[in-house]
Structures are given as structure tokens and as C-alpha cells.
Length: 160
Image 1: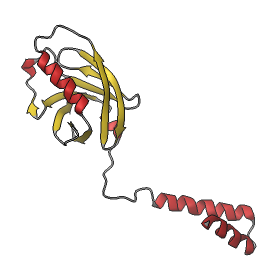
Image 2 (image 1 turned 45 degrees about the horizontal axis):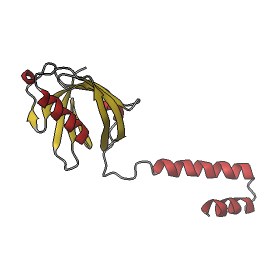
Image 3 (image 1 turned 90 degrees about the vertical axis):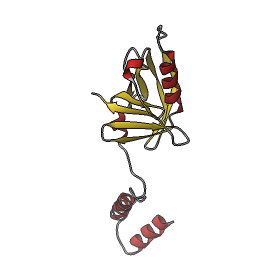
Image 4 (image 1 turned 90 degrees about the horizontal axis):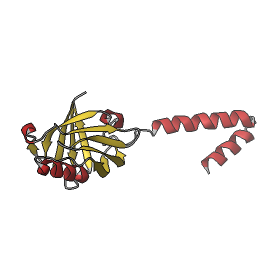
């Protein structure tokens, strides 16, 4: 409606149509640029900052004891491909990322190897925590995952 009135007004004043449209397009671009970051209450995270290799430092709110597993659990996130891989302390794991926004994440079903592990509890707890992750926060070299209730389920440190 506004565009129609503006164009009619400009044409009545004797401006040519192309010049009028150029002014209108310029005005729209300026107004769009002014409206880009209207909500100042939210903080934006660069999702590419997640694209890295992360080593587990805490599981379900408790510091991770490295001596309890064969390998150190890691998570490698590939943002562009929406995939993840790593290990759970014993088995190699991989899967897709079903949802990834600046404030939410949802890991898809996990697949992996099935090796004979001396401590299956860590592998099971790790898989459950990864599946429970619903949101995240990156602070400096640490990556935190939280479940739907806001409980911290996984904490990683950047390793590469």
C-alpha cells in the first residue's frame, strides 16, 4: 500500500518511473538495514565457532575422570555438514545434527563401533547426555551443553 502511494505521488510530481523506482528501492534497502538487529536483548553466536574438536571435561555435572576410560571422550562438530563424530571413551561414534540454532541443538541418533569396553557405564552415560543436550553455550575455550531443564550435561574444552 505504501509503495503504491509513494510511486503515484512521485509520478504525479513528474518524476520518471525508473528514477522513482530507484529511489523506492534505495529507501527499502536503508529501512531493511536499520531493522536487521532490532532485538538487542539476544546475543548472537557464530555457529561456525562450534566447528572444532572438543575433549570432555565434565559429564552430568561431575568432573570427568580420565582413568575410567580407554580413550578420552571427544566430540568433533562439523557445522556446515550438520554432522558430529568422536569417541565415547571406548567406541568411535558419529551422527547427524538435527537442529542447530544460536540457542538450541539436537543431536540425531548416534551410531558407532561396538568394542569390548572395560567400563560401559561411561559410554552409556556419555551417549545419554549427548542425546539429552538441548541447548549450549560457548565461553572462551569451553563448550557447555544443557538438557531441557537447564541442567549441565556435558562440558568440553577445545583441543585443536
